[in-house]
Image (cartoon, rainbow, N blue to C red):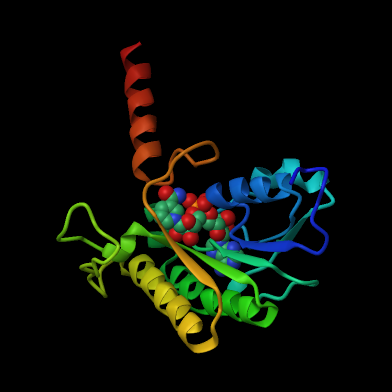
Length: 212
Ligand SMILES: NC(=O)c1ccc[n+]([C@@H]2O[C@H](COP(=O)([O-])OP(=O)(O)OC[C@H]3O[C@@H](n4cnc5c(N)ncnc54)[C@H](O)[C@@H]3O)[C@@H](O)[C@H]2O)c1
């Protein structure tokens, strides 16, 4: 399939689609000829990340908080659920919004997948392991999470999201996948968002510029 041969009727919903990973995913889907409804409330992501896509007839940007509901027109084939504050700087600033995105937001995204008989993909996190007692972590490891610590809104939201995803598969037969993303990095990450690799790069560059 190429960009010039869109598959009629195929539509993907990407929650958190203007964020770092979401914007790359939207690009890739549109390049494959799949219609994309990118849903984001811009709490941590910038619409500028998808501005090159807005000229495409395959791309629709919807400004919406997914904790309030998720309904898009037309048949939906895929639901990619990425919406959440993610970086430590963000989830420490927005702990309740983080819990809501992982709980209510995940349920709305799963309900859409159930209604549309769509494939559902959850962007989870290595943070489901908390402060792990095993290194490296195999998928079968259940984790070591403090449920009331400062990181708990993110860790527990992701654990709730995984549990809900598994329950929708067992209970309703929704076709789902869970991707536990570890530290990824690349273009469009914000230098000051507190994640390991941008922080390392920013500090290294600041130090280099001080030396010069
Ligand atoms: N990038 C990584 O290394 C990494 C690691 C582990 C997990 N993940 C997961 O991947 C997904 C994407 O991460 P990212 O790095 O692109 O983060 P990001 O912060 O760049 O993007 C998240 C997007 O979600 C949006 N959002 C947050 N709450 C929302 C809500 N209620 N309604 C609508 N939109 C909302 C934000 O505005 C933002 O655009 C997240 O679910 C994250 O937990 C990423």
